[in-house]
Image (cartoon, protein in one colour):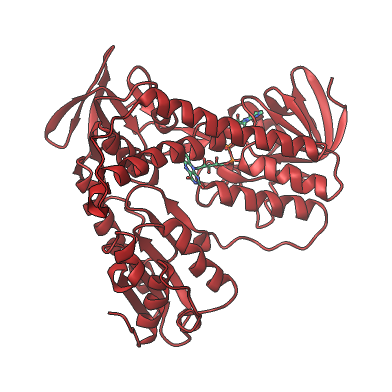
Length: 456
Ligand SMILES: Cc1cc2nc3c(=O)[nH]c(=O)nc-3n(C[C@H](O)[C@H](O)[C@H](O)COP(=O)(O)OP(=O)(O)OC[C@H]3O[C@@H](n4cnc5c(N)ncnc54)[C@H](O)[C@@H]3O)c2cc1C
């Protein structure tokens, strides 16, 4: 039996919900989390973590295949996909077990069931009504098809793509954004014949154009076929395959993955009856402290505006809880949140692209270097990666940072931190970086922006 009242009830145990619940417990709130599926949310169970677990396998395979370049003779490696799935499940279990352990350690009750808002300050779950001073909605998002298509049969979403039991022979991925690029990059390297289809004019279309170019070359090298400016239509799923058209061509693949959009999981929450308003995009409307239109009800993560990213959800959870506790909070600058795509080549960025910075009227300075400019690029076998800094000329402000190549998703954090701590590219250019590290490419890009590139 759950208790009948709490200080804080969090609906959803993803990276938004469980982090918020722990912060609430730290601040002395008697807290419960309600989860209708599996603790850890979609991120840990079906999305970020399984994706990265499978991508890691593709990375290991690539390293083995390239071992000859390093003077190691290896006979042709073979992918045991059952073993890949087993490791993926083990990674998920370890991490979700860790979250359950943290919730327990912080004395947070976990209530299993689907929650909806009931009266003011109340939720309903499994026929019980439970009251709370604060209710935090962290229900995340669900897949959405492209217009004219529906999921079913062999037409699947990204979460299902990462959970396949057998390695497909053929696959089409619709959408070359972060999720689509990751799926295409993993399966192509594992041995699937992949067709990557994008309606816009380049892969990773929200990234800086220079970065997309390098990413596309890297993806194509993995053997997949890429079509940009191409719409997928007339999707028809049979019992073992899917037929469709793309541009003027016809295709048939074992699995067609739609990686082109998600929407908030709000159906069960009964928001309208509770008076919780939505914004123009159909997301839960919130202010900078994540307060909804109803007093005492907050919403975070994929339910709300801003990039749909796990770390964004977690940060918003902390803001919401601290606001509920009466602490001073600051609204997030969404553009400055790091964005990471874990395909090969790795891609990461924050802030404005060069094009956006120019459109916004900044006087723009660009510092761009290839990884080959620094020793580590050659030592570790990636000379083609790029670090591109988009800066503002007069004050040396960092407007954006864009990296494609090995370890990009780790390296971008330096630029994010520098900006958050009010440093610009002239300051990064004078920070001592370890040698030989890939991060020296960030240093050189900052020097290039500041007008005194040394290696290059
Ligand atoms: C394939 C894929 C890969 C991704 N990879 C990354 C990545 O590498 N990095 C990254 O930052 N982001 C990634 N994302 C995005 C990331 O998964 C989401 O931004 C993140 O999960 C959002 O967290 P959340 O807490 O808002 O919701 P979720 O993780 O979706 O968790 C919400 C939870 O709420 C539960 N719930 C919903 N409604 C109710 C209800 N009424 N009652 C009870 N429980 C309910 C759900 O069952 C779910 O467990 C990826 C997404 C996908 C689809």
